[in-house]
Length: 163
Length: 166
Image (cartoon, rainbow over all chains, first blue to last red; front, side, top):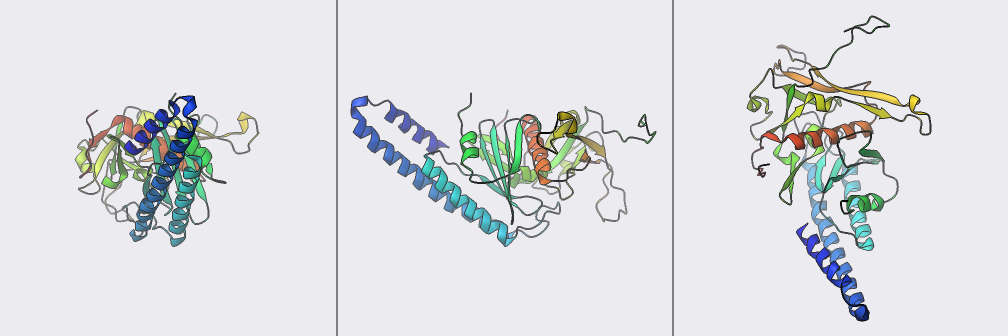
């Protein structure tokens, strides 16, 4: 998050350059996009290792009867992560690492918090489910469902500056 | 209390002011930018009925830890109790929405139980009626429970976790 705050500061500085410095502004913006992309790829690699480490958990790993992760869920979660990092890079959006865990069904769980917003993904063998929430009211402050398509819309929502 | 139409007894949940304890692993806590967050994995439950202990019966939170490294978060029954509306048929009028009730019920575990669990007179469960049929709604419930627990804070911080005082 500290890295992203620095990136945002640079972004703001670029935008405040005088209009006649258009070429400089363009070069700096390109460099900033590359820096963000490189950070996203490195983070995907780092978090991918955390996902693979979940395969070392056996059934009942939490003493609450939860399943172990299947190989399919682990592989799919790693693929989702790398795909998402590329999307984030392409869109020039900020990246930050999720918390990685397992659900009771052995699905890989990714959780991202951003101010009051939270995005949770449950990656299983056959489907990816999500919960986006901005408060505890299950009717009015949460949306949930099966993820179809990419994550970019949810990510854009998640990282919106607070009103 | 009985159902007015059928006369069948309706089970009532705990009193709204009953405090509940949930044991959480150190790994269930994410520290980010000096803030802590509780992961939904803290409320994992194979039967979609997360267990809690009733503080009224087991007042020392340390006694509710499942392992020595675990912490304890607190919930309030009245905050957990809720009604959830699920659209069964998108586009249908609101009347056709299925209403789910979330409540907390005393489920003491006796000695010599068939599952060979340790006896626990304080045991209670967060249950829904009817039972959630899909992950989607239970996933939302776990999210809600995390937010409620974060708001009330730790009674015992898990071993190895450092959180700022509120």
